[in-house]
Structures are given as C-alpha cells and as structure tokens.
Image (cartoon, rainbow, N blue to C red):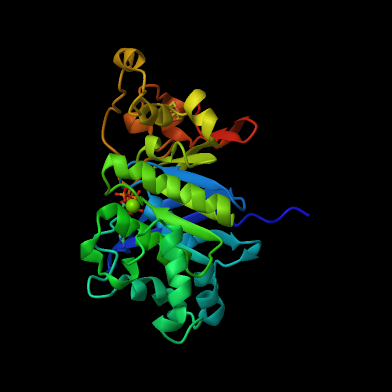
Length: 325
Ligand SMILES: Nc1ncnc2c1ncn2[C@@H]1O[C@H](COP(=O)(O)OP(=O)(O)OP(=O)(O)O)[C@@H](O)[C@H]1O
Ligand code: SF4
Ligand SMILES: [Mg+2]
C-alpha cells in the first residue's frame, strides 16, 4: 500500500486585506498566494524558492493553518485540514512544526535551553514538568550536536548556528511528520549554513520526516531538496526534480535564479552571465492579466499579456508555466 503524501495542497489561495472598505469603496485585498498546487511525499524535501514577497512564508503559514485559506484545499497525510479547528487542530499542530529564519530572536532569551526544548512537550501534555522531560531533551540536544551541558545554559551563550540547532531540537520534540523550515539558514554565515543543512538531511534520513524548505536562493536548497518548486508573485511557475531544475530549467524566471548560483569551477564561473530581470515586479493588489512575469520577461509576447500560462508537464514530474518555452 502506498502512503498518502504527508502534505498536499490544491489550488491554495491566500488573500490579505490591505485596505478596509467604506460605504463607497469595497475593501482591497492582496492575493499573496494564487492557486498553488503541490504535494510532499513521506521522507521527501520540497524546496520552495522565490524572491522576497513571492508568497513563500504565506504558503508555509497556510499549510500550518496559521493564516486563513481564501480558496483551495490542504490535506495532511490524506486528511483534509483546510477548515480544521479546536482540539483536532491542536493535535495536528504537534505533527507539523516550524523552524524559523532568525535563531537570534526565535528563542526566548530568559529560558534555559532545557526549558525551551521541553516546552512543546509540556504544551501538548506529554510531560508534567521539565524534569520529567530531562532524558528526552538531552537525547534531542545530542541528536542535533549540542554540547553535553547545553541544557543548563541560556541562548545568549551560543552561536547562531548552535541556536538554530536548538530550534531544530525543539521542532523535533514531538516527532513531527512535517517540518516547515522558513529560510532556516539565511541568517547564518555561509560556512555554518552547510552544517545546519547537513544536520537537517541527517535527521530526515533517521526519522523519515518531510520538509518544506523555504529559501530565496537556489544554492541553499540544492543539496537538501528532492524536488524544487519555484514561486513568482504568488504563483508556482515551475516544479521539477532537483536535477532537472539545474540541468534543464524551462521558465525564464527559474533561469534568472539559476544564473545567480555560483559554480565551483572558476573557469566556468568566469564565463557565465548573471541574468538580471528587467522591469518592475508585479503589484499583487492589482496584478495584470496573463503571465505574472510579463513585466520582467525579455520573451513576453501578446499572448503572455492576455492569458495566464498553465503549468504543463515537460518531462516526468517536471511542470512549468510559460507560453514560449
Ligand atoms: N499579514 C499580512 N498582511 C498584508 N500583506 C501581507 C501580510 N503578510 C504578507 N503580506 C504580503 O504578501 C506578500 C507575500 O509575502 P510573504 O511574506 O509570504 O513572502 P515571502 O516570499 O516569504 O517573502 P520574503 O522572502 O521576504 O520572506 C507580500 O507582498 C507581503 O507584503
Ligand atoms: S509566459 Fe511569456 S511572459 Fe511569462 S515567462 Fe513565459 S515568455 Fe515570459
Ligand atoms: Mg518569507
């Protein structure tokens, strides 16, 4: 029997109110996520990449049911959770955890590491107090490579990379099926980024959990992702297995992102041209008809300005939305 995807979303749409309505004027909404569809299998990592404001965090918050869905459906391990509330939602939250970008602000500076890691266990009634969670907390801290006395210390005595390890230990405390990692290494030094990514990969191999790994840069998700979804202005423009994104990208936006990824061979790197998109980004409160990338695309034609390109299959598991490629 094949297991259902850990997470799947169908036509997920999220709009934020940006201006209240009056008697004369209807309220204004900004559609941050527009008909997004994807699935993540058990043990799989989907990288979600796009520039600032493309809607990545909103997707992450919507699947964790921390922001309301305006349209579309969300399924967790085969069960629809789009409208889930009350006790079932509370239980669901134990099964999906968030790892945030900034390890300097995401840990309470007044709490000892032991209390920080034990907190989810207390909140979900798995233990009565921190001392009851002691062995479990120590095992978690050991799993993420923290020093033996870490549980007694406070966040300020650790580096950014170590704090992110603590954040990961806390996210793992309830043995979730899914971790939404929203730019988990963007605030860290490049040398430390690889260590944290390796740790996440290691944990996935041991525990078989799934990741939605959000980043604005393809190089960050390259090693950890099985598949990569590219987002632009609220829409997914391409999804493909990792190798296909790097070897045979289809969408002009994916190609621009790819041109920013450094290549280790300096000879090849010197001959490469960084593609900088032209024009202004789309106003999400008032998007033009047609392709969202049209204002920045060197290949836009009349059709692009009128009709939205659908996501079509280009090879097995590789879809892209572009009229001209
Ligand atoms: N609570 C909110 N109210 C109104 N608009 C919002 C809200 N949160 C996000 N937005 C808008 O929705 C769009 C998508 O934001 P989101 O944070 O999801 O993007 P992102 O891809 O995560 O960007 P970044 O890379 O900067 O984190 C942006 O235009 C943003 O300004
Ligand atoms: S559909 Fe047209 S505007 Fe959009 S990316 Fe393709 S060529 Fe460019
Ligand atoms: Mg974000």
